[in-house]
Length: 96
Ligand SMILES: CC(C)(COP(=O)(O)OP(=O)(O)OC[C@H]1O[C@@H](n2cnc3c(N)ncnc32)[C@H](O)[C@@H]1OP(=O)(O)O)[C@@H](O)C(=O)NCCC(=O)NCCS
Image (tube, rainbow, N blue to C red; front, side):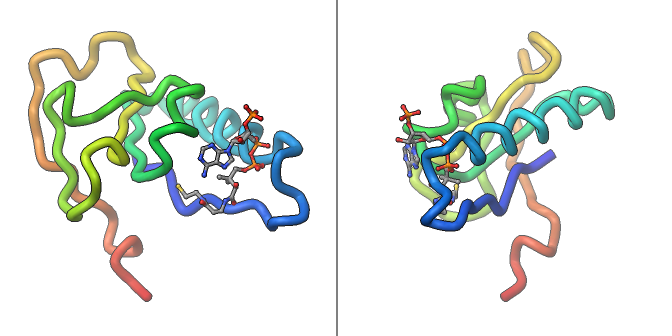
């Protein structure tokens, strides 16, 4: 699964809304039985939710993005062990 896009209107930022959205999304993915969630985003924001560098565990992004901005959260411990791949996003991510 891929997490995006995410935005909180500027006057409502830093009130916990973004964190609540990420946590709710991850919980829903867990409920659906998703193994892992990828995100292209701020490398200083997403680690607090369990995301870490995707390249460090063998995954590269189909888009040219800074290495540290491409992250993954394992929802099932060890599910990515020994796997490598290029991650392709849903066509909706390429529109607009
Ligand atoms: C990133 C974003 C969704 C966070 O939403 P939010 O509701 O403000 O987030 P929260 O209130 O849950 O969390 C605030 C925390 O995130 C941190 N944070 C916010 N934006 C950040 C960023 N770009 N990089 C790193 N940390 C960030 C804040 O410093 C704050 O940290 P603290 O809890 O240690 O004080 C919001 O800032 C936003 O919409 N930004 C513009 C769009 C964007 O960049 N979207 C993300 C694309 S990956």
